Length: 197
Image (cartoon, rainbow, N blue to C red):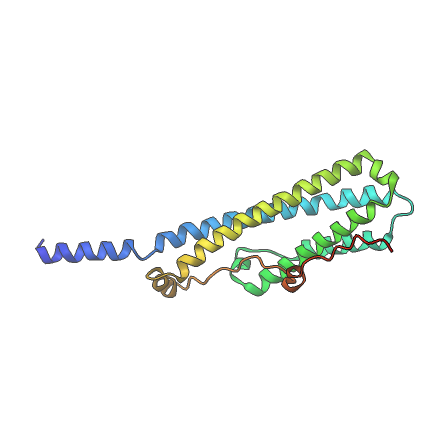
């Protein structure tokens, strides 16, 4: 081999190693794995709902509307089919995220309302389910944070030079991240009033 062929081979090797193709593969798998953990935790929460609802139904005077909203939110959240393509479809991702947000809100409302029922609060089964739900919500938060970090790493690679050229050639689009449903509502500080009325 001539010196020129060696130089060309070396340049080709350096160009391919700097293109980011393997990094895209690694980070794509990392985001899929992180997403699977998010889904796993959402499924865990959905699996707890029937037990919580059954326990709460035992409370004779419990608000039926609150229970109905939880059941409906669970049905909606579990009816959305999630595929690996969901990660690459911002609209489907947003729809899934909204359904999970509705279930979380309905469960939060159920827990707040349950505070008004001393017999229910004293129920050991309900207390255990409540602890499991709180633990699951924490796991969901951790899993979402890991997913957000994975997506950030992938998206930085997809937008940085020279790996953005590889992204264009192989159609590696940035992935959607979790977003807050109502950013304006949470940006306003809470109003606290200690005056007696």
